[in-house]
Image 1 (cartoon, rainbow, N blue to C red):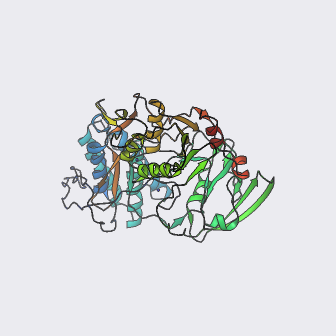
Image 2 (image 1 turned 180 degrees about the vertical axis):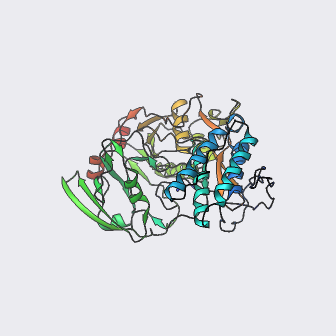
Image 3 (image 1 turned 90 degrees about the vertical axis):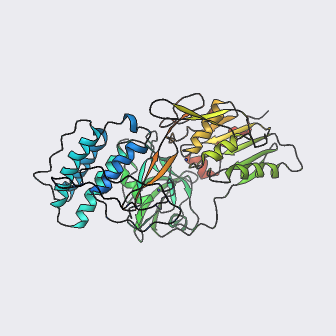
Length: 466
């Protein structure tokens, strides 16, 4: 609608630098309102500079100004988590301070910022070096954004460690690369990137992961985040060991993978298309980036040359989202004059989003395949298909990561905030975010199916056309 991970949401293209100075406070620090965050420019900005109290303050006010919850947001819900994270970072570094007491917050946005800023600046002044000041500022800012509990809000642009994925995805992730709270053991490999460390070692889709570096993915029913970090964020050159069970053969296999930078993409994501038995058009859509809709329409037309198609199977599994305009355009192939969703503010004022009626109708029955990695714009498309009865959903519930379309905002140190200015609800005015869209027919991918080359979703779809 993350950055070397295989499933991540695209980061902000950052922006102009504001040169306005924050207002000095008599007690020290930048207790006045910092300069406002800025919209993104066309050109690439300079590299990020240090994160400071001014950066935190800019982000704080930027959230009030631009996040959809701003008009009803309690300042304490942002600043209390930020201060807690700051003190936790102090403790991790052995730098806790006797005077690092929580500021008194009252719910007054400006007064609370002044209290927080004075406390923050006193703590920062007592830190021994720039590295500790940067780490504590980052901790506070990240916690403040995380407190929004919004899957489309994020702080971006701070350089991270040089990490690379091993080249495969585990089944217990969903949407924006997070651990799926609905997932259970066993965890299995859902996809392997060609040319990756995993591909070179012989890892295959369907392999059930027993351990990574001798640690199981789940311990007593709880997912282990460190296992995901080894898979998606291994340090380049790091060797990771993995033991798997291969359902197709019953073997237990041990792999050793050395993390290497993945090969550069050879082009845009491929939109696979083929003719299924019974003159059904199958099109796989990996994302809703332009020109997704026209690519689907062109694939259907080509598959229909010289024959009368009976329907379309649109595979949205693994689709991480993209452009709302492409959603409206693709839905316009199956309906005209329909409201497909609403974008609403915190006070309940909603603007309808409608089908793109410039698109000719396809006039073919539709089955869409969904899974837990159908996120953001994919959530929105699936919701409209179900609400408007434009087709049938087969597979698994979608990710439920469709808070609302994000806009980029630049902070003074050349980092940025992605914030949704409206939240999205479905055509029937139901909440899709955090819930997802349930399929009409449950046919999830399984380890055995992947391991043996079967596809339960396609098999079910073939039975649904008259």
